[in-house]
Amino acid sequence: MSHYSLGYWQDKAANLQIEGRAFIDGHYLPAADGQTFQCISPIDGSTLTQVASCGPADADLAVASARRAFEAGVWSRMAPAARKAVMIRFAELIDQHAEELALLETLDMGKPISDALYVDVALAAQALRWNGEAIDKVYDEVAPTPHDQLGLVTREPVGVVAAIVPWNFPLMMASWKLGPALATGNSIILKPSEKSPLTAIRVAQLAVDAGIPKGVLNVLPGYGHTVGKALALHMDVETLVFTGSTRVAKQLMVYAGESNMKRIWLEAGGKSPNIVFADAPNLAEAAESAAAAIAFNQGEVCTAGSRLLVERGVKESFLPLLLEALAQWKPGHPLDPETKVGALVDSQQLDTVLKYIEAGHAQGAKLLAGGKRTLEETGGVFVQPTVFDGVSNAMKIAQEEIFGPVLSVIEFDTFDEAIAIANDTPYGLAAAVWTSDIGKAHRAAKALRAGSVWVNQYDGGDMTAPFGGFKQSGNGRDKSLHAFDKYTELKATWIKL
Ligand code: NAD
Image (cartoon, rainbow, N blue to C red):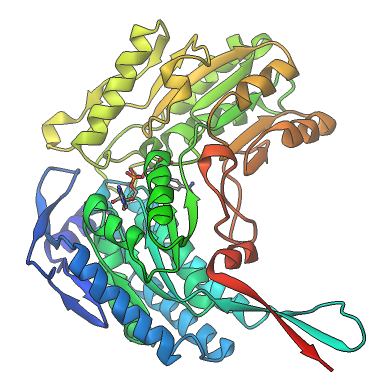
């Protein structure tokens, strides 16, 4: 039995000290021009703190600090085994501060506290640890040269990296960048979303406490169009890594072209198909999984299973199972450890989700569950997990990323039709298939244009496999050793013997 309760977390929240300043060159600082913005909790509309609203001047300071640290070699030329030890200490400090970090995450962006604790914070520490542990085990190459030559193929850190991240898994998305960027010896400027800056600000101090030299990790809270843009256009940032919407991802490519052709790696949106064939091994399990795939994290998940493709022959029996499973996902107080669905990130996101629900009605989809704002009396922004049946893949709710708990059920008859519908999207982040036929599972996995394919499960994966998208879901990969490609340049050195 866990000792956690709503009261436990509320007490802790009442006594929480919240840091809202930027972290530059090893110190907490206000924005250069003194600007701040209000950090509002979507749980109840209360103001948590004022946060530094950084701009181009802060970007210049942070990039200069990162550059100095990089050139000094205090981190970039540290022995990999020594960097490993520091990163493992960093992960341990995150684990030791897990409750505080989870609480910050929940207050800041509304997700259930149990998810914040056991998913976000735990996996953030894991990402840092995994990358740290890996870095003294990867080798460079010797090329198959003629006898009188020695060709060395080595990896070098790129230098100064800017990481711009979203609000749905704030610390975890940041750690997928920090892990490989730090492990490979780079200096970083992290820009968290203006909707969820608090954990990034807090862990900057933990990084220094762990032994990461000052200047190696800087954190600049602020808006995308101010400090985000300044970093993306900066002439002394070598690599920009991003997780966020496809719209902003495209803009960042323009900024890179307009400035120094910085390397740019994008993890963007998704509209992932979850395909239930009539021969699924267990329809009840598929239904539970489909409910979780749209309701977990309030549907604010890049890989949300937002298009549920169901074979006509089993739809009648499948839908009641789905609705029964979804009933378990009721919005509740995000600080209650039993809560499975929390608040949306803010009222703007609530408006977006409600507009898509209206569009579903307007285009003739049939509402089966949810469809409304809920718990309004709390002052928070909550929406009911929602299911539309009778959706055609051309409808707005099937084509556009909603980033909320709104599921579109689409019927199909044949394998080829299912694959065609699944791939008829600008995105290509993830897909799932449910079938007992191993040949069919493999054929589907090959035919689906997506970076991750799950068979008889939804959302499998850990640090060992790459994660990222085809098409307009992005380029490059987070996680696994493949992530090192984003943070290193390859060098060929030719020695005449
Ligand atoms: P967003 O694109 O609105 O913002 C992401 C970040 O970009 C924020 O820090 C924001 O301040 C910044 N930004 C905005 N405009 C900018 C500009 N002009 N210049 C520089 N920076 C700018 O995305 P969001 O709403 O925070 O996050 C939701 C999106 O993230 C969804 O589309 C989701 O699919 C995607 N996402 C993708 C993955 C993945 O791994 N593929 C993971 C999580 C989230």
